[in-house]
Amino acid sequence: IGAAWCLPLGLGPSLFSSDVYSYMAQGMILHLGHSPYHDAPAVLAHLGEGHLLDAVSPFWRHTTAPYGPLFLGIASVLVGALHGDLVAGVLALRVLELAGVALCAVFVPRLARLLGADPALSTWLVVLSPLTLLELVAAGHNDALMAGLMVAGVTLALERRPYLGAALCALAATVKLPALAGVAFIVVATGRERAGAREGRGAREGVLFALTASALALAVLAAVSALTGAGAAWVSPSVISTPGKVHLAVTPTTALGWTAGSLLHAAGIAVRSRSIESALGDAALAATAVLGLVLLRRVRLETLVTALAALLLLVVAAGPATWPWYFAWGLSHLATCRGPQRSRLLALAIAAIVFEVKPDGILGLPLQAAPAVLAGYVLLAGAAWVAVRCSARRRAGAETEQVQPLSGRGALL
Image (tube, rainbow, N blue to C red; front, side, top):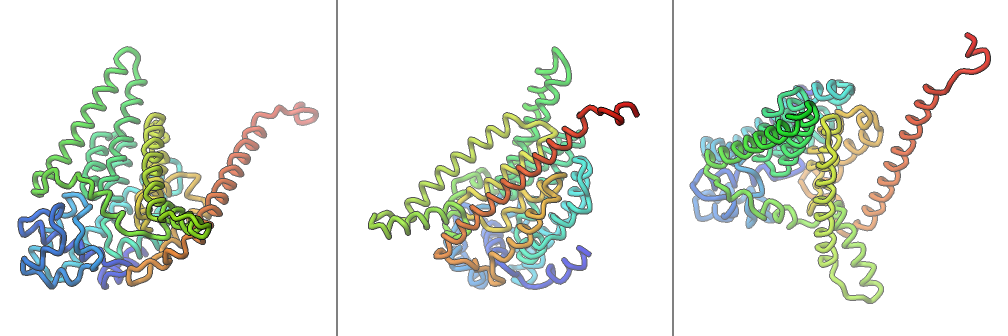
């Protein structure tokens, strides 16, 4: 079923986004010997590739690349071999995204089995969901490759192959940098387990593993950077600043900042919404970093997937731009967990989130809709809180029934 659904989307034109043309432009810049981390697509006008520049959205023509060297290195080879042909380039880059979906199809059910969850249900939620089919396959976003490599790495780490798992997550980070969180969680959780496995030498073995796995991940990053010719330029502020150039009503900090600014302006207080939004963004970034450290400090192998999923989802929600396809980072892990995967709220969110973006790639909600979006987030948070509380009460009730002693006739029997 998944292959049948992916085929027309994979062979058709780009839908819901024109980012694939930015990928091609950045790949061509690297192919021509320039750095896409220093030169924006506008430079193609002087390099004889004006037809490729025309396909890039005007909003992104003067923006440097926020992607890792692995993805742009492969894109440069493909685009160069196809001489910048637009149709062939879109189809070639789709192969990379389909490879990411294939990795999810292989490793998502394996991860679900390891966690005692339903592998078929996790496959529907991750591989065959509207979010994957429309926002990753049809749109051609490289988040599919990042998510596939991350899920593969986490699965292998839980299957007692942590070195390979850390290496794959590091490889995913050379597509998009947030995948480094997978490396950190694997290293800390596995190192903690090895430190507690044996008395005496346990702590030393845990530290040795952490150092070795970290060195391996750094070696992967360095090797990819060197082989693609990108160097260390890709680890730059543009990775964070580039997405922040667009202001979306669905981004929580933007919704809150715009709403607060409108209310203050109506009250006669001259405060720019952008200033409030910027301050909220900095606060959200700091809070995310603190929570990430807390999760990292408490993570164990048995909680690795849920902790990593929570952090990735928070990074998207608290980030400068909350595009719907970014949620695939954390949802690809969360859907393999026994409790969350049976939540109707999760299934509804995965299905509904694709309606944020029109087929032409334009967000369906203008900034003026920020108050309504903010109200929706409050209701969603309340519903999630109630669901978690009810689930906790049901578990507590079940445990009480199991330990309650029998009395009367039941005791005699």
